[in-house]
Length: 108
Image 1: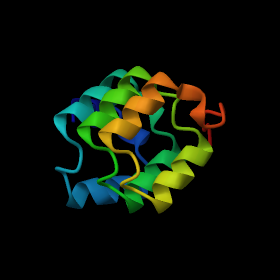
Image 2 (image 1 turned 180 degrees about the horizontal axis):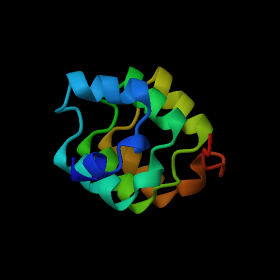
Image 3 (image 1 turned 90 degrees about the vertical axis):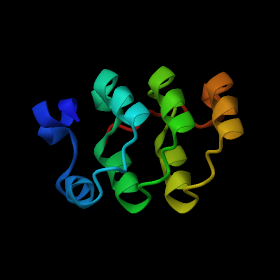
Image 4 (image 1 turned 180 degrees about the vertical axis):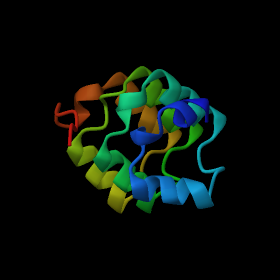
């Protein structure tokens, strides 16, 4: 929360609205990742979190921490429609096969 406190613009307005009403959505692990990789959450990513706040489990956040660009646009689209798709085993696969999704880090 310290990061958000000092860098409030990292989250879009709608995302902050959600966090404002559900402050516990981001676990300690999740916050640790944001603290070390503040740019990993682009506008599109935050849009997804806004609609599927529970998609990022501890395991998922651990992977993002080590592979911040693993979530390409198409990957995020999938999460948007299948928020539970990233189980621990699924994340393990992506961790070892980062190119399983098109290598296009989302920048929008």
